[in-house]
Every structure is written in structure tokens, then in C-alpha cells.
Image 1 (cartoon, rainbow, N blue to C red):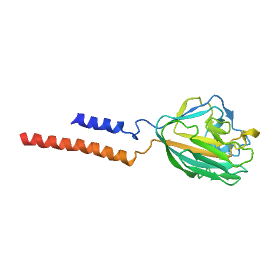
Image 2 (image 1 turned 120 degrees about the horizontal axis):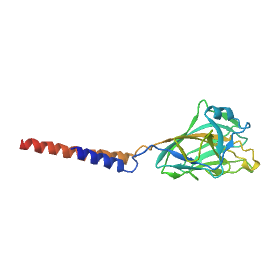
Image 3 (image 1 turned 30 degrees about the horizontal axis):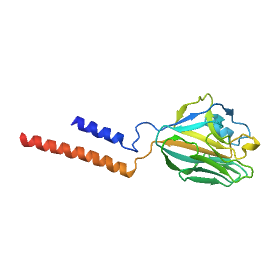
Length: 216
């Protein structure tokens, strides 16, 4: 009986979509820059423990299938900037100054199969001379705590966009996003397979009990 339950558990953990480890994203970077005073959200970021950021050459690597939830925290831009994911989530800010750190605006939640988030997370702008950016580009900032070392893993990280990076203001406050990482919820088909598997085990156990009783 014990072996049957162990087999069922092993089968469940091996099914696609069933998380076997905590979902995290690894942050890699080669250099950091202090969040400057001209970042309109410097105090809010500092209050969260983020006094630095990294941009050019940085990477975000999901350790496996993850569910990503995005929240809009603030923007300071004279243009309409958009945050989007390759899966279809999109949000555009249209006001020159918005501060939602106290009450973040939900952008949405999406599934990511794992690996490098470059080209999956993107910022774009309508600004003349502005530069679109994805992970690893100069205009795509990842906020960091003091003393953070490359290669750390986290389930929450913060992004900042600089839509005029060619002007080198380097403040990355034109669009700030909070990202929360969770294990993905199994698809309905996966739940069906799980229920079927445990049903088979239950049926086998019931037959075993019935046969034992008949020989008693």
C-alpha cells in the first residue's frame, strides 16, 4: 500500500506543470550605479531597500516554469511609455507623473516557461529619439539593494525604464514595475491527470482490500 502511494506521488511530481521547487529568478550583473537624486522615486525605492540599479549586460533567469505578476508603481515621463511581455500583457502610462507605490496598479499575471527573460520583458516609448529596451539594454534597469552580489535569486524584483537613455540622464524612473515570481498553477488537464492517477491507485487498493476479505 505504501509503495502505491509513493508511486502516485512520484507520478504527480513528474507531470508537466507541477512545480517541484520554489520559483525564483536569478539576477546577474557586472556593475551597479547609485539611484540618482533626479529619480523622482528615489525615496520610495530607498524605503524598499533599493539604492542601486544595474542595466547594461544584466540578466534575469527564471529557474524553471514560473508565474509572473506585474504591478505598475510609477512613472515620470513626457511621453507615453509601455511595458509589455512577449505573452501579450501590456500597460501604457499616459501622464507625465504618476506615483502608485502606496497602491500599485495590477498589470496582470502571465506564465513563463523558464530561462532568460531577455525579449520577454520589454519597454517601449513614443518619445522622439527614445530607445526601446529589454533585459540587458542600457535603458532597462534592475533595482538592487546595497551589497547585492551578482547571481542572487529572488521571488520579487523591481524594474525601471529610461526612455531617453541616449541623453544619459540615467535615472530610470520613466516606468517602474514590481514583478512577483510564483510557481505556476497546474493546467486543468494536469489536474485531470492527477485525479485520474490517484483514482487508479484508490481503485487498486479497494480491490486489494476486497480480495483480502474474501479469503479471510
